[in-house]
Length: 168
Image (cartoon, rainbow, N blue to C red; front, side, top):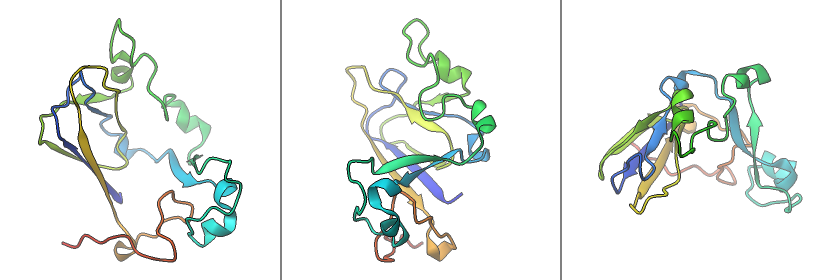
C-alpha cells in the first residue's frame, strides 16, 4: 500500500450533510481500476517521456479508467465507479450503501480521518443547508521508497523531476 489518505473535517460531517463512507476490508481486495492519462489525448510519446504536454487529439478526454481485473471480479462490486443502487432514494436513504457494505463515518470539525488509499470510500452530495467543508490530502510513496509509478499514471512530474518530499 503506497498511498495514505487524510480527510480533515473543517465542519461537522454528518449523514445529513454528507459524511465520508467507507467499506471496511475493501483495502484487502485487488485494485479494480486505475486512473490513467489517455494516450489518445496525450500521445504515446508524451506518456513515455512523462510529459504533461498534450501531443495527441486534445478533443479526447485527458484521463480514463483502466480496468485491472477480469469481469468476474467486477461482478462482486457492480456499483464500482458509481454509487451503489438505491443509495439516494428518499424512502430508505442510504439503503444501497449499507447493502454494499459501506458504513458512515460521522465526525466533528477538527477530526482527522486517515486511511489507506485502497480503501473504498466516498461522500454523498450535501443537500442540507449545513456546511460541510473538508481538506483532503493524499501522501504517496516515491522512488526513495522503491516505488516506480507507471508512466501512464494520472499524476506526473515532467522531465524526471521528483514530487515534493516530506521527510520524517
